[in-house]
Length: 216
Image (cartoon, rainbow, N blue to C red; front, side):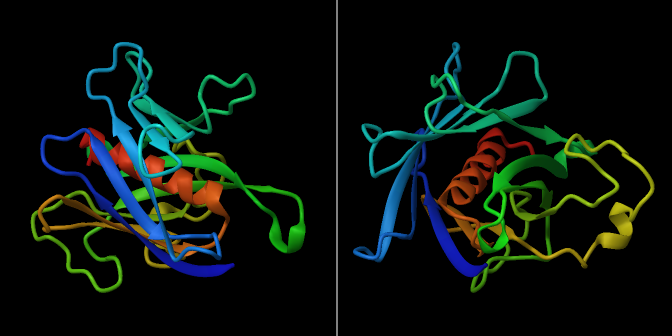
């Protein structure tokens, strides 16, 4: 399922709203725009709300919340008020916030049964979005890979297997975020696989949660 696409993410200074522009899956349009509203003062509100359209009046597509006294985010697709909503945890699993693990369901190959991906965002200085240059002092650059078989989504050992160290450089890069020096632009998110729109929304929501919190 190869499909390389790039989402450009902008947020003017002193504003609490991201604008995300990327290729449209609708054959009648070449691009689409969605917005994400950031709440820095929570007061029982979500940390981040992604809307499926160019303004906050559009339907809610995804939500990120930061439970009280927690060290992880919870991410869901759709309206968080729905009864059947499924929350996925985004954990910090490495000192100084270098790695963040999470999981999600994606469609199966050749119309097979859905399967679960165990994923990790890792801070990177080597992997960058096509056509971009890395900011010398920026630590807000991440690559997305599948979690090694010897780890679970919480970063715990679950049996003998390949270590993190020996897998460095061998895991396929599913996505990468590179921050930008351009005024009002956060950076670009490049997605190297096509697991559907829901997967793209999970990528955007997890990535923006990390970027907004300054965890890395």
